[in-house]
Image 1 (cartoon, helix red, strand yellow):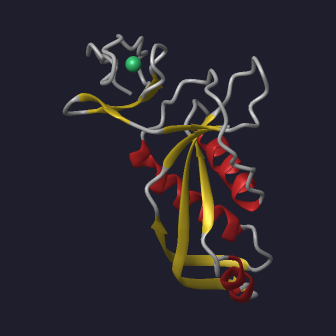
Image 2 (cartoon, protein in one colour; image 1 turned 180 degrees about the horizontal axis):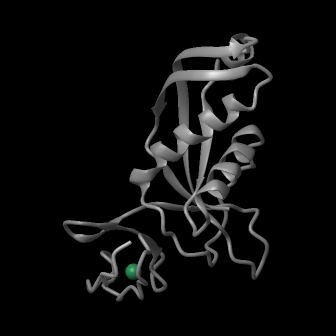
Length: 178
Ligand SMILES: [Zn+2]
């Protein structure tokens, strides 16, 4: 980790209200007008649509997740013993929703939460704006975490997994506050 401090004056692209950005944060919602924003190398911030779940409890802080539909394809499984290829093929026969926590969490917990939510997706009904924990994961990291989620799910099957090959066809992630 570098000790570099980022000093960029960020402001809302819609109403020019300054964004009180903290180091490590990568996305915000304008307190003034509600515009979502994503940190951008070139322009400071770019507009980002942020979705809020209707399920956030009143006066509670929501947790931001990158959510992307992904089709897991070209599966190849080698094992030391046993063979769960059929269960694997059945599980990934349909595209799945990948939920990647965008708030601050140790990486193992990011993957655990992603596995849990992929297996049991939550209802995604849009609701009103709410406060939320800081967004510190850039969308560019979502694919790597999605790959860890697939590997984690496949490693838990009954056979003894030796090697796994796959590709994820991942839609662009959306930022949801759940
Ligand atoms: Zn604004």
